[in-house]
Amino acid sequence: MAAPRDSAIARTLDRDPKAVTRAQLLPDPQQALASRLNVIDMAESSIDLQYFIWQNDYTGVLMVEKLLQAADRGYGSGRLSTMYG
Image 1 (cartoon, rainbow, N blue to C red):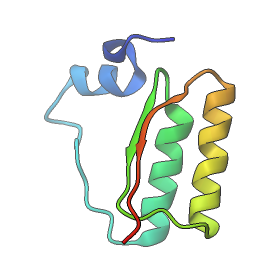
Image 2 (tube, one colour; image 1 turned 90 degrees about the vertical axis):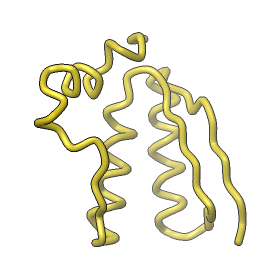
Image 3 (cartoon, rainbow, N blue to C red; image 1 turned 30 degrees about the vertical axis):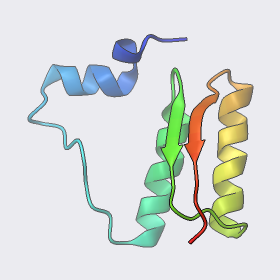
């Protein structure tokens, strides 16, 4: 597994920190979900998630499936914090 500073995301940020947005509001729910799934697919070392609410709906099931695929690749979830509201 790649060291945290050797990940593709870290390399992109290190190249030109001003050229890459580190946080971005995604008001469109479909775009936000696609971005989260893409980040899981790109994981190179670990995946840390924190959600206030995690439901057993389409989105929740899809996220779990992607996390399981990442775990099968050897990139386990280091932390998953949830709280039902």
